[in-house]
Length: 111
Image 1 (cartoon, rainbow, N blue to C red):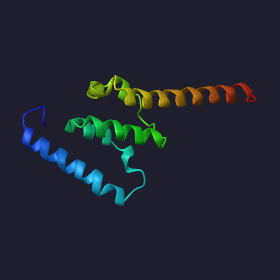
Image 2 (image 1 turned 180 degrees about the vertical axis):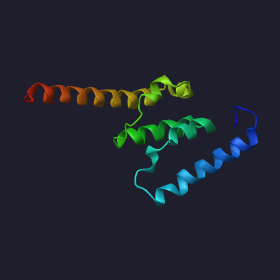
Image 3 (image 1 turned 60 degrees about the vertical axis):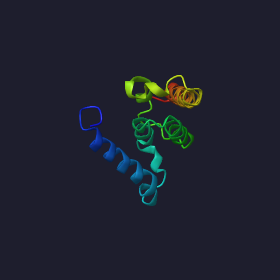
Image 4 (image 1 turned 135 degrees about the vertical axis):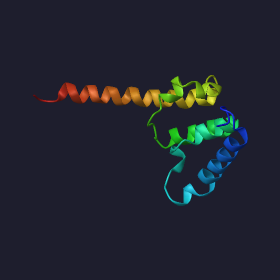
């Protein structure tokens, strides 16, 4: 909404979302940061929190949808940031290891 005309409402919704994910969601589920903390912090302009959220997600092995960080323009502000790139490389390394493991399993599987 912030980009399509109602900036005040968009900002209010973003503020409420960040308040919820920081103060409420952790009371209900373990590892709540796996949800889109990174995107919320990016929308708020807080690159430090966005990078920290992404690092935490990677630290705990929550890689679902990791490729969006490499392709969507929304994440452009993070690209080139050394900490972000290092965390993204850790994900790529893990994906490579998983593919190699699957290839080994496939090679040794019977008919």
